[in-house]
Length: 197
Image (cartoon, rainbow, N blue to C red; front, side, top):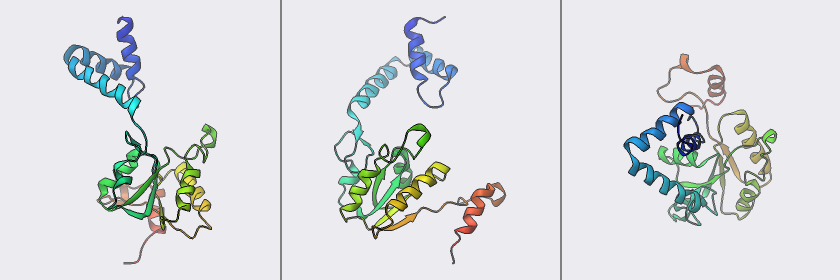
């Protein structure tokens, strides 16, 4: 029904997570009918980002600089290194306001069935960084999924003889949460990791 170029635009928008055929169609039609300047800007910025944004040489987050702003910030605590799965996780931890150390972004989690092993996650680079002796505490902040737990376990085992303090972020009942709304696995974990007050 649509022209070949419009169909191609719709199909291209479907590469985004959560965008199905109807959403992609609505986006394409909106840009063409109501916001061509916005569409042109989106295209320009998207092209620039795809060619100019790479990975920080220190932490592997996304940046157009060789070293990202967090790693270049001399006010950060270089003795703490927080390992996360994605750049979005860096943003989440930063927004909490409770952490002033540095990061290492894995860009995923161990998944042997998908061909994602330690090398694909940069774990050898992480071990090299830890070997420099600057980091004293390694904080494992991978997701509370089976894969995230397996990844944290692998890293913890890799650091066993390093003399580093290795910690895992707590998981449990969220602030403001009602106990009857929390799943049994999360509640069991929160109980097993309770702290004396």
